Length: 125
Image (cartoon, rainbow, N blue to C red; front, top):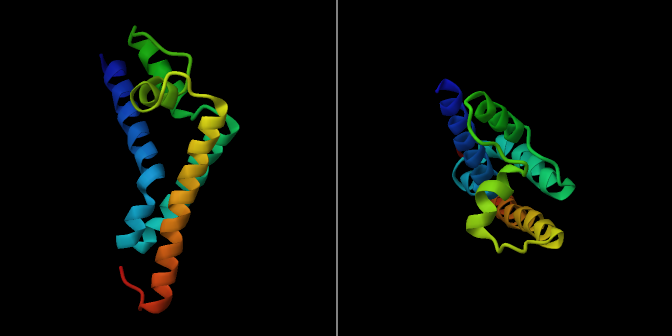
């Protein structure tokens, strides 16, 4: 049972990381120092998507599920959990590359806005 709970915790941590990669730039609007965590996370997320890699959390989750006697999966986290919910069944590699680019564009726009704002105002928290 402990392995099953640990696997579920990995899923929650993985989902939180994906959410942070996609939306973490918005935290920078409030806390500029969040950029020091978000920029490397966003770069990693974009690289994993662009290269077609599997995040190390996915094999960890599968190993814990195997130890718990539960079913594992052969795809990555996004394919297994998010794609069925958010994206069409016939997602192509081009779409996947587009999604990775969208993450970069959205976060780039947020950071550009924060950078322009910071040049006009004194530094805050």
